[in-house]
Image 1 (spheres, rainbow, N blue to C red):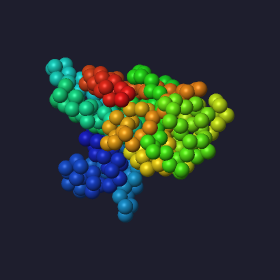
Image 2 (image 1 turned 30 degrees about the horizontal axis):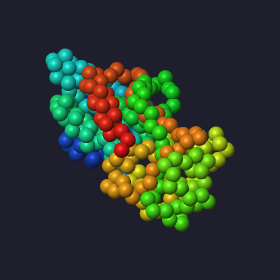
Image 3 (image 1 turned 90 degrees about the vertical axis):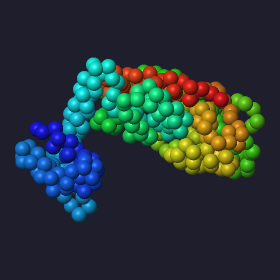
Length: 308
């Protein structure tokens, strides 16, 4: 099997179009189609179904896509390791970040990466846990930062630190945000009191949502969810307008333009603690460049998530 043909197939399958793939690969579309057809003849399988909207993998194509990504990833790692043997840390490192962290650490991470790994390429993806797990599985991501990931033999993990979730309320109480129990001016509230407030939470399977519901179940309560919003900035803007309250790590306010628009309450009896983990595949070796990226990521996270 020719690696170039495999690369062409993966790109067409990922982009869903011969036209887009030919532009991305900088190859004429007839030549691209010919190479894919030669691969199909060699494997005696139809790999792509052509239609008016583009091209989608057949069942055989989906299988080859999964394996092909892994093969191409291993080839890239081999080239990177050979380059490292010459004393240069190069290659591409793809990192997945949850939305709650992305805004806080993206800029300092990119700057540190450029300064300390100038010959390497950084790729960042923002998304929720399900997307990150899939990216690690198929090889689109080398590293991911996840909250409370489930234990899996497919993943290696390292605990970065624990975050305590806090109640974030509008600085000026509004009738709509009061619910059946107003968020008092106290710096601390019990989880039972929090459970009576109207909350704006991410939708399932967001890690914070699952954690909050699980902790409330321990006191026989359910959160009063008035809105499900999957954007961190959108949640905070809604809280700022007095629509409801949020339960998030304190550091999410670090980069918000006007943190004075909020009141922060710690939660106790019980508290809600979330583990922040660095995760990578257990089936693919890590390169020196990736290990250096892990060090950078850990350092930047320590700075970016320190409480204000």
